[in-house]
Image (cartoon, rainbow, N blue to C red; front, side):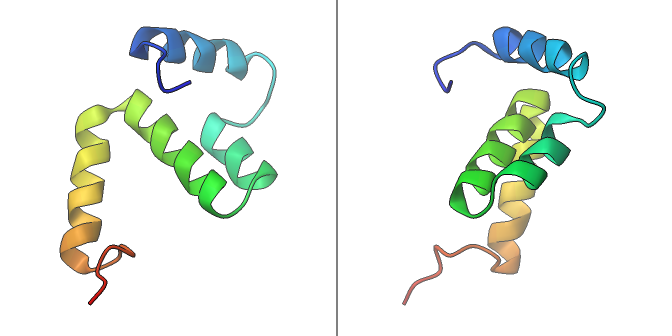
Length: 71
């Protein structure tokens, strides 16, 4: 899925809306948990709005909300 082009993923998200009353993020939260959930949510957010995705990641890093802060 990560090799798909952004426009392909956006079309897939549009078609997905015809099959479910919920958006992609809500369905992911309902169906999967843990690291897989986080990975899928990151991917969906990136496909929807790259700039916002990176702004959110930067904000999390600056607030210390990432597990990458190992000593």
